[in-house]
Image 1 (cartoon, rainbow, N blue to C red):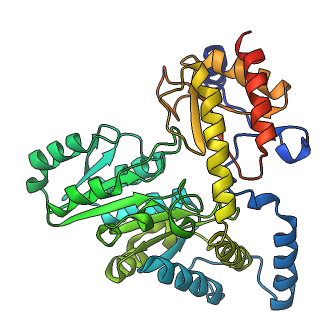
Image 2 (tube, rainbow, N blue to C red; image 1 turned 120 degrees about the vertical axis):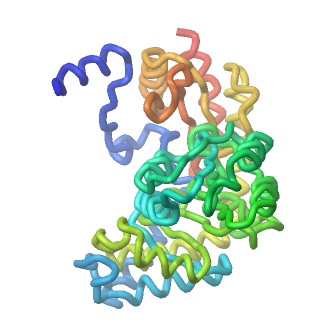
Length: 377
């Protein structure tokens, strides 16, 4: 393959990706591309408190082995126990959201399984399904009538079915209807319901536990996936499920079995942060206020149909124009990075505005004036 020619083609079409600068070195730039939804990443007091505790406890900086071989297990058990109590199930840690989705889907599904997934689920879920070699059908985004049609037509031909959705979608910020998904799942035996809460965790539901926790139908969700690298300002991921499924995963999820485990010090930090997040209702309220203000700004640019959310897209529909607007905003002090294929489909290129509770209302209000200047060029 001529790699240079491929790179040149990406550049010519406006689809070349480059690693962005370190936003922490740009104090005058408002970061609207981070997933630090609650502003915890910049909480110096919390970080200082944690490192004082870590020094006293002698927490290891590395696990030095996979989870099945590592000697430093206590921190993993403490966090899994905390998560299990909060969600009412059995928790299992993974190294990242990608590791979790790939490991879960590639092991829970097989050639006798039908996977029916929302069209906009994470790429990591799709990759896991492909590894499983299961038959795979997508239903139209948030269209539960279409989901039911697929189930009526195909479910009886398979030994098991897995329905997969996200609770808050990463590129549009809209939400799944958990009760509607459960309604479909309950009509078909041998069906698992799998919900990825990556972008809801910390933000939605009681204590920030996500949309499943807020649903009266939560007991019918078989697998919940969450990540620590977004609102929780840490690293890693988890699933909460039944004990038999957890035991199965420990023996079959290759991303767990063959990966060096998370550093115990990172797991301890996650547990401390999770305890803090449960009580951060004021930050969640601030995030909602900012979301309404941002929605008012973006609605002036054809975004009026977008849901009020901490994630909001401005669809441009052209990669070159999307990159150009992103650069103009950056020059004015706002980092809003362009989203292009393969993350989104051609023709839906966008700026993805991602809010943090650490942003002030004044900064969002000023964005309205900046958008007028930049969008008109």
